[in-house]
Structures are given as C-alpha cells and as structure tokens.
Length: 403
Image 1 (cartoon, rainbow, N blue to C red):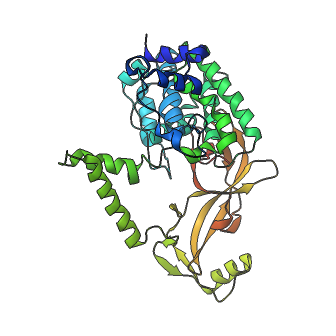
Image 2: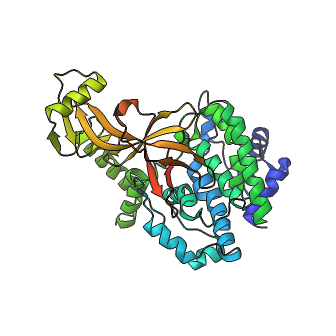
C-alpha cells in the first residue's frame, strides 16, 4: 500500500489514529519493535503544555508545496494537453515576459516532462507567484464558463484567507466552506484521491480560532535566505564532518554578532539620493498635510521602511471606498520629512471592480491627474501591489496582501 493511501485510510478510519491514551498504553508495553515508542517524549515534562493540543500548521508546506502544487499540475495538464487552450511555449513566453514588479521570486520555465508527469517543480515562493498571477497570465485563453477554472478560483480564495495577517471570527467558518469546496472540485475534476495535505487544510479554521492568523506561524522566513538557505550552503561547503551542527551554530552566532555591531535591526528609515525642493513645492506639501514649516522636506529616489522599498511607479493601497473596493494609487514622487517620515505624492486610480475570472481588480487611469499626499504610516497595507495590462488593453491590479 502506498504511503498516501495509508494516510487516507487513517483519516477515514478513526480507530487507526493514535490518541493520548493509546500513546501511554503503547509506552507501557515497552516493546519498541511493536509500538515504535522508545521512551516518553520530553515535551510531556513541560509545565502548562499539552503536546496533543499545541499543534500548529504550516501554510508553506501544506499549501504552497502541497495542495497548490497538485492543483496547478492538474490544471496545466488539463488545459495544455486535453483542451489545448494554449501551448507550453506560450505559457513559458508569458512567464518570461510578464512584469512582476515588486516580486523577487519569478516562476521558473516549465518543461514538457513536468506537464506529462503532473509535477511542477517550483519553490514555495515561486509557486505563490505563479498562483497569484496565473489568472493574468492565461486567463484570456480560458472561457468564462469553463468549469475547471472554478478550481483555480477556489484555491485563490483559500490562499487569500490563510495568508491574511488579520481576520474576523466569521472568516473561520468561511474558510471551512472554501476548503471543502476546493477539495470537492479537485476530487470531481482530477479523479485523484486527496493527499494528506488536503486534509490538513480542513483543520485550519480551528487553528485560526485557537492561535490567530496562521501566516504568523509559517516557516517561510526561516527557510529563506537569512536562515535555512545560509546554513544549507555552509553545510555543503564545510570540510568539518565531526560536528556539523556545532559548526553551523558558530557561523550563525558570528552572523548575529555582525547584525548587532552594524545595527541592522534598528528602525531607521533608509533613503536613496536626496534633492532639495523648490519653495513652491515645499509649501504645497506643508499646506496639504498641515506640516510644521520648520521641518525639512527632501525628494528621494527611494525610501525603505521595514524592509519595503518604495519608489516612483509603485502601486499602493490607500484605503477602502464606500463600495468596498480598495482605493489604489501610483507613486509619483517620494519625500523624506524631518528625517523620520516618508511622504508619497500619488496619482489616484479609479477602481472599476473585481474581475473574479482573473482574480484582479480592474482599474482605469483618471482623465485628470488627481494628486494626493500620503504618509507611509497611514497606508492600509505596506505591501506593494502589481499593475499589469493584458492583451485587450485592460489594466488590472493584483493585490499581494489580502485585506
């Protein structure tokens, strides 16, 4: 029996699952060959901690390296090989030419073997980028009533909820419904059995109730360049094989010491080259925002706050309009105010509405430039968004941070 089938059988037959009482019963047998339990877990000795209650989930492994991989593999194979709505060459060309703007992890080109085998080899961050912009990439090839496209939309809805940094309590029941819909559509169209990670998602709503947004618990940042990747590179090129863990720990401490010495953890704003403003422009900003006339204002090429770099032509989300659509703006100029404040000169964009087929907001550029000055602290979200123009000339904004 395959490991995946064993997992599914365990989920269908609850008697096969190990519970707390079963754990202690097997521990008392003291037969490692029969129970695989060698000794009592050290976690049972921690005060006010329940090993079976303090379980957590990981969006990165469960969704981005799990369910999304299986769903996108099926969708690509279905549209390219069966319906032949577009070719692999067209998809790769669009992946290469697409303007991802603030994204640092662009998807890799796909090969014929990946499509035939139904296996997409992308890192978690690249898979997130592929899923996020897949509607803009090939949505114009897919008819609006195509049923399998509903599986992609269902997956996008689930991702939006589990990647949100703040949620209402009602979102838990909504997530439970969305996960059930996504799993049912995958079973219906792919004719495959659900892998264990699809089942893990069915418990996400209860974990959100207990621990809050699960995005704060994922391992993405630990496995990124500052942590996991650096240690893997050091281990690969280290000649010490007596105690590789000690070697990596020492290297990690040296890196942390450098961070403290250079003051990389401070909240100081980083800016690019500065230029002085003329008196007319300076008075205009001061009057618009009711600023102190004695504080200095400089135009800067870019400003970095909390790891996010703002520069001209970036897309910001300023707030929510009365029709519940977000208000977007494109940065025209960036200013440094009193050495610790960042001000944006923005052109306000007109939001037409949400196009669910491509899962983006359709916007238009206003006929007259509506200028607005905004402090960085007052943004609805500090995450930058992406503006793209599709083949028919329609302008879409992909929101990179659910709100």
